[in-house]
Image 1 (tube, helix red, strand yellow):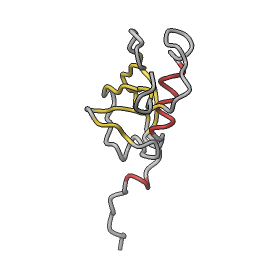
Image 2: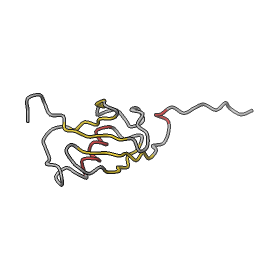
Image 3: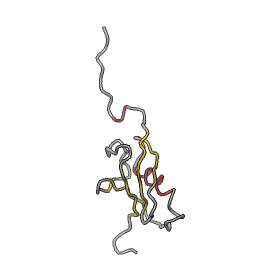
Length: 101
């Protein structure tokens, strides 16, 4: 007798590749960034910023936030938890405190 098949939860699967269309802050170049379902939003932000920050966009001393479908995602959230799909568009912006310019 075989054991019944159970569906694996998101946290039980091996990380899968998720290429994202991304843009960083005021950059004019959209890029394709490979991340995995296990990457956190902090890691996604760093991966996107790597291609622009200090090159076409001036580096600023503020944390970065990922925006997907109009919502800011917490840094600890994974790509899988955020339900981000391959080729979805994300924007990465600096989280500038109120009043700073």
